[in-house]
Length: 156
Image (cartoon, rainbow, N blue to C red):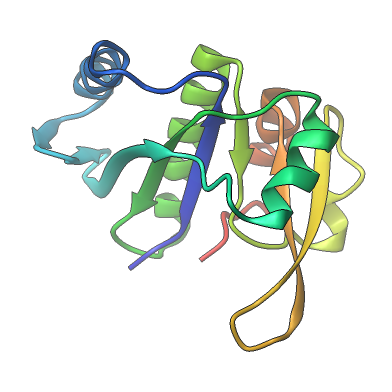
């Protein structure tokens, strides 16, 4: 498996929005098979769901964002090479821009990424092992900048 990311959006993704996303994916992809698709020969998958509003961490994130995400587009790469990270990042950027959403990197970015333009939010959380961790979230401007950096990667 490769890296994963989520795109948090302001509204619940009804069937109509999910179909619009699937149509956009079809336009970007060489092949689509259900929730799986291939861009530049690289396998990816997409899923839809609500945001986990029960978590205390989620409430902190909502305060930082100034709005409450209602839906999530889950994206993942099927492999872990550099191109898989890049393609996933570009797909995430497309959907963050399309929905004026926020990308959930599902983990902590390196210190070198913390001074980019746009908005980057850090959210502390405790892992299932009881370890204090940080997860990063960003807007489209930051993600577009991060994609251009030589050390770019998505979190695995």
